[in-house]
Length: 340
Image 1 (cartoon, rainbow, N blue to C red):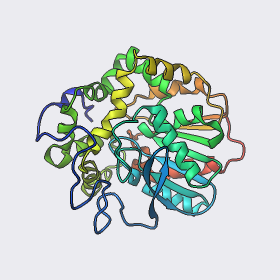
Image 2: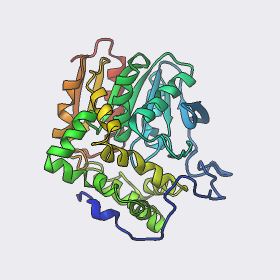
Image 3: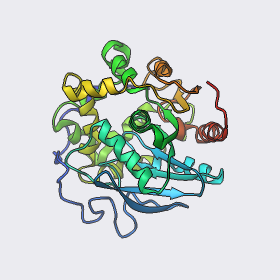
């Protein structure tokens, strides 16, 4: 297993437009929609539609009826990463909705708005647009970062919180700055700070680096994940014009804002405790986010908090062990009194 470092995002491959105003691919359109649904609106038991929230348009896939469970993907993926959990949640009596974050998949690629506070307002805005009073938020990686943030900023809209493979934002910040091992494991984030070059590298050779990152971050427990077909889906989604740039922008904000007033204000805001029941899931062999970094996040939760470690699993427990992950998730969502 190899942890990619910042040198992986060097200037190789053809140049790609950095800004979100790049021309659309005529085969897919600006949001990945083509004659057969494009690389984003993939067929399945779910339905696809767009919803308006926080001044932008967001693509969602939804399945089932019942209490809303809103699923937030991470990097370098899109809504499809939750395909296993969507069917499991629907069968268990929930309304499962997986959204594409701003700038990714079938959602709008706006010129700005990629700071975590605004991205979290995208999430809570989608909850309102779906006509629900609240939702159980389930986030992986960057989606987990935004789920933590939404639970602090709009606690009345978050019924329960589930985070996978991501520490609390304050814990993430301190680990990246003070823990050499975590800083090295997350060195791809430092590499993202260079202009233009990361976008070029992500798109080179038909987004081959996307497949490499997923392979390197996955654990050895499930050799069938990721297979070439799955990697092809993620590579095609990243190749939609402007997606690479928009996918990187949140990570640029996280680092570049550390000494700026907006970053300092956000870090202070996140001192407010999470006051909704929280389930925190992590793979024991995650090479991108160390277990020690995530495990200290419970100090920011003043509500029932449950920590579960998936043995032998890497950065994608919901795809590497979909049955185990879905079982843990559904049992916890149905538990009327989750333990601390």
